[in-house]
Length: 286
Image (cartoon, rainbow, N blue to C red):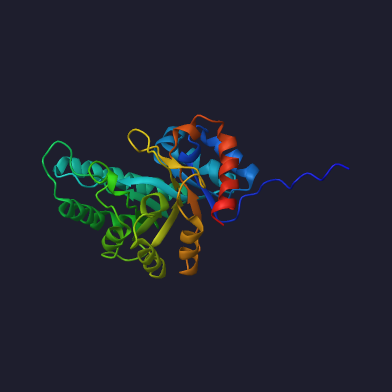
């Protein structure tokens, strides 16, 4: 007798996929694939959404019943030059407007690295320039019902991409502003190594400042450039149930977004990768 076919794979209710995980899928195909797998949330990236059209993307996603869990990314706020700072602030205000149009309440910020082209090596001063920019942007975002989520990146990115390297540094910046305006985005890929991060994550959650939680695995050896080294869930060293339990036990009720930057995954069929990602989430994160 032929055994019954297994039930179709359905994503857990709290699962969200970041668009970059399957960036090979055009937005309409991503939306269709999410519907087929019962995925309820998607994190979007500005560049492909701009290419598709902000209003058109909002209509497409909304029509499919998908919630936009985050928009990535704003930030890059560490420049000295007044003209560069003005351009960065204008771009971030545009990102806030895009988030509002897409219907997400969370814009993820990557702070930016040390200014290029000079000899500035003052990391604390660079973080202060981020704080100065947040003082300008936070009220603008609040008026549009958008929260700013500061994402710390692993210290290997501090020089050129993100001077905010720990969850504690991110929370210290966020706590200068109201919790409904500025919080943090915690990505396991960037914080798993930090023995202070569990305590900080709990504090951020209980104070209403954990605005986004993202998952990616840490695998070695890192690829050239290190930007595309985020491993598929279960392929590396990160204890995902530990981080998920920390956030949930402290009161985080939001979505958990899988955000993978991985050339090998991008070279594969996007629907296959998305299906695999849901299976890995169930097997390694729940």
